[in-house]
Image (cartoon, rainbow, N blue to C red; front, side, top):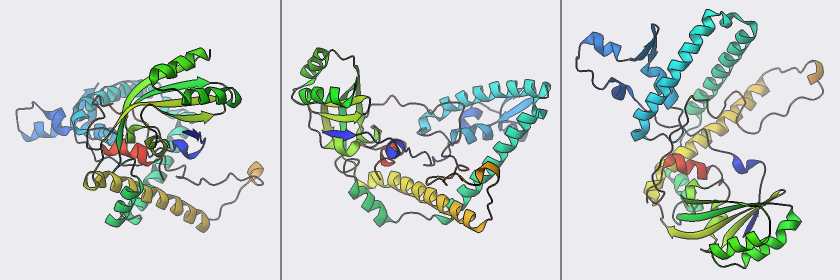
Length: 338
């Protein structure tokens, strides 16, 4: 099977799915034996840097934006965040010592950040209040429409081959590869072509695969490959083996509800931004009079999908063979299958 790369919506990631807050105050306060009120209050401070406190609240704010963070990863992640905040505080102290906070360019950047946060917060709160939540019927409908993610979900052992070249050069090669049987023959044909290629081997459940290929890959038999073509070459995903691991509706329901809620809020934010533009008097001046920028058709620029974080979300080393489904991983697949 061959599919064509789509340069636009193919990689639209669902970043707006909100995680439940990860509370780490207990983990950071562990080991404090004295229960006095003064020491209880002190546990809200995670560290002091030359007298300046870094609080548990600051750490939690960052952890809440970590996509895919699991409860058992919270303690390790909290310490990573704390170390980053300590480094940040040290640099901030030096910047203030040198009066960099009074630099005109810095003042402008701080004001731009303030405006961005205010705009984003307004849209987030408006969307949370006005978007509503999906019904059970809507959740069931989505479940039924995505069998490759749920009722017919598979775990794949894949070999990924990246082959450079023009469409004309690779067409004949793909036809030869389609006639092979098994990984050994597949590699032999690639080597015989004289084209330099790269290979990678992964084992992954459907929801963890790149967006846009889950449905077509579900139709590929073991020993065959899915071909993804582009202007500068193609990728071949050879299915070495696959096994069925369906997810029941009740298992998938929380993740689907979370996803659909996030989609509702994103759509509401887009409509709200359009309504604000309609109600306002917007005048383009100077060089912008004749060529106004096209309004975004996705999330407004003032409402970024996610904020930068000082540490990446921890990566789970658990195998993808679990019969349950992780909402954060599922959202990755869901976002590309609308």
